Length: 208
Image 1 (cartoon, rainbow, N blue to C red):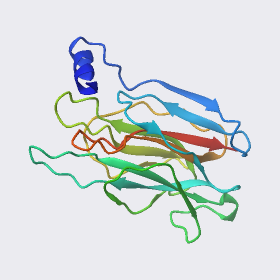
Image 2 (image 1 turned 90 degrees about the horizontal axis):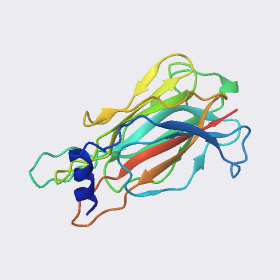
Image 3 (image 1 turned 90 degrees about the vertical axis):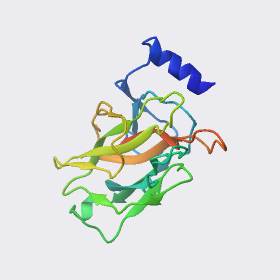
């Protein structure tokens, strides 16, 4: 039914584009000046998972992705991006493009795929993000979120190794504090004989 409704929205021109973004605080998290970067995308399947936050005094300087290997058969069901993992470091100990000591945090992840190698900022911390999301495909294979980019406070942009399906949304707002320090993801559970999409959306937490 949801595929039929989404297809109708596309046909009559009411399908929402990937553009809306906001920032809001979170009183449940005990870090200073914590704000969620919140984005809205054209797929909204699944439920929001738990919040995972970097240890106090650390911030995300790198990330890795859980990606399902693509298949192209007529009946294949691709899910593309299944998970995002942030890797947190203590900036008081210096920032570089490689680290021996770091903590990893992640929210819910999909059931398929393998984790990629870590991509680190050349300098600085993660401060903003942008998802690549495929809108509803009607009766064809849906994949929802396919890839992610992050801006680093040092000026570089990191792009994941996801697929080229879908479109890049707008950039989130940039963290007003030191950088991104937590994550929450929206994951669709396995659909059995139905169409699986896994990760649909993500929110990033900013901290001072």
